[in-house]
Length: 466
Image 1: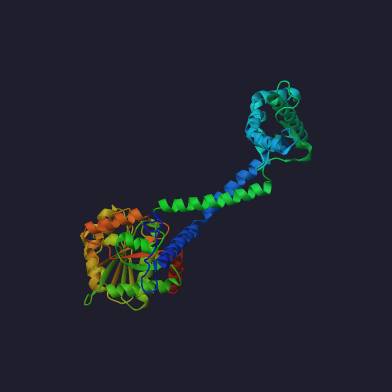
Image 2: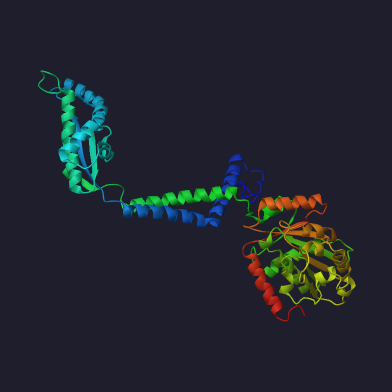
């Protein structure tokens, strides 16, 4: 699902070659589409469950609150007089042709009014006819009459009254003056007392049907919501939208330490030969994407392999990186406000140093735009092998865009299931317009930050950064 769930697409391409014909390619593409739908349903199973439970609950509430209803059924035969084969078949055709007319007679409000008067029912013809159904039995000249009421006795009485009035109305319509027999009549072949049962669908069947319908509607709603969801669902989506290579996926599988090792190897591969030090700017798409976690994990991983590393917390709006490690006394704010000179921050030594953002009592833009801060980052390039700069979210602030000119590599951090594709596209366009394009994307999956925090806690609880 590319574009943050904007559409369901087939991931990858189908290879061609000997023995791979058109039907095989179609099956391969179909399998990819089915896997994509299954992934959506796995991710959004709660939507399916909620829709199913709501629908089953509504049906159950209806079954519990509706008044009891019983149905009585009778079957009538359309009979025509005949005592030889010729008249029999002619009468059969006549009976088949007259069935629609008899059904229309039953639904006449005048007939329902006569039933109401005969039984002294407290209802009106329209309501009485709503609970009365006459349906022809296929391939026969018989009709089933069903009436509903709130008790078995009432259902029987109403059904019998309808039979009496209906047969009389048909006899009157089919009578011929002077003839001994009418052209047709209704003959009761099944009395209403032989079939009285609760009306409607059985409760178990109704709940089962509601559950099936809930699963179907829930799955449909899940797929439709995924189509309009702008959040990224696959790590490759973020890289494709950004137009930059995927540097790593943190928390996708295995230990967090292993994944930071993969990220570290990619950074070494991108590092230019002969460069004294490399400044890496890390900026998240939004506040919850996990940018500080990635910056801390990367700095700790570089330190772990013996690289002289400096981590700088340039997220002066919500400082976080300095709280994760044992930081220096002087802060970025001290440098920006001339309390400490950039040269005083260049102390010799190996290992990991962390420069906190400090207590910001002025505007954040003044800190980020400070020439002293930019000078400090430039000098860190010659004082350490790696300088990891953690900045504010690029989707919310322009801090990262202002700092990008001092960095050798810019990494964007996105979070699966959270970061929006439109924000990633906008951020990438802004960095390209500033001639500082994003060099790579690091994706955090839902379990990534938690796994990284546990690994960092284990790594640094034993003596901090010493």
